Image 1 (cartoon, chains in turn red, cyan):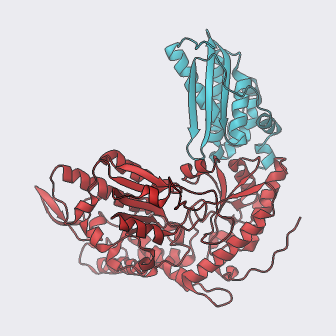
Image 2: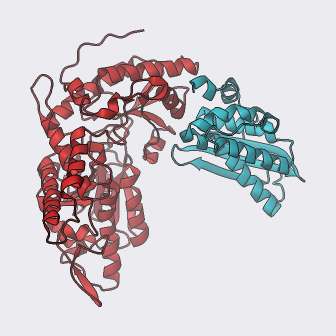
Image 3: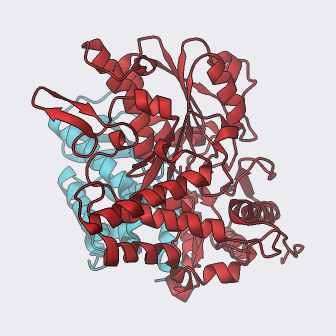
Length: 448
Length: 152
């Protein structure tokens, strides 16, 4: 049952891209070629990133922002140059970009600002000017959505437990979109003058849904709330213009965008960062330390305690350069616009191909409007773990489970889904192999 | 390692035709265990008369490995003594954690030997153990408290 699809326009020159990723040429189980469809969990790394890290360690390694020797100077320059490169990618000021361990830590940095400011205020301790924005009282409300990754849900539940604030959430409709006009779980019903924070994902890691951050942000700002955006699945895949997005904070991880693990990014409006108490404390983040107490450095240093992950920052900077260097095969697009067009084309191809398989149901938008490349699906009669096992047996590496979005799966009445995610090194052949493997799983388990 | 040796016929048969599935009374202890990485869950009830396991009833949802494993657990341990049941559980645990290096003893494990192939897939070991760990938890509580049976 071979389905012939029309040639796909908008793709990158995948052969050339794949040559930059040595891991993609290895074989996996049973000698199969690697069909890596789990970039939503973590991406593979091009040689340019590995080389940048190695070059840092072989030529410039020193503890950054310490010491006056030549290597310290070079290492600091490399670290700060990476910060500027990454800031430019999203249209941020360099001083607004904080390096963290990962996106989860970036989101916790923001959530802890609320619980820390609240605790200090309760004891009458010193806070930066403007920190009252972060002091919560019982009855204040924090709004999230039902499609959040646990990393943008659990930290806010913790803030509520520590401060007496109340968690509310925006619902998700059957198509997998935020149900913003719902009478009980929509924007109008959930937001009020008690709302202090609205935290939402820019692109669901399960459904692929791209959310209307601007509309939510405008409504949140109208009631005086701050807007925290989980951009883990959008910054690696879409052109981002902060000025258009309307967010107050944006968190993303390096390892999902061709960069190393161990580095994440928090962008925040400078006036807000400056008003926040510190999160992790210790060396580098201080202004003056006395036995009686300490004062703290301005952002971003205030939030970068200890010797930072300089090589990883340099690697992430190289990843950004690499993404910016990509061109559509037809030459019409470059950089993140080319990445987005490539994934858009692959996603359309994948949705079409999976729609041809009886017994496969995609959980999330069925069309590509405002949709990224995470394609999660249920194979009727086969648990996702078993689907994943058969796929893996054929070299197709996908994610199975609840993808750290358990409430969202509950919303759709499924315990687990199989998720394919695409990136710059995937092509239509990968999709074909995925679909063939899904059909094989159906035949193996006798459901088709 | 091929798919057929992981998904042995016995496993697929127990998955499609689970033995003893469904929650029953009376029972001494009920536990609910989840596998947080995948969301699979299982409720297990244990019923004892003296030292004899008179019933293990269960319900839940999850992959073929976790559900078939619970079915085999029921078939293997009901009617046995607690001591034998726990010894079988220890043998199954050793097999699952053996990375494929432990030779299974069919005299002890019965149909549970069919899960030997799972041990070569570390990500699936927790699936196979879900029911067994739940039963072990439940029977340990039952023995510790000697809870009177809940009347039907």
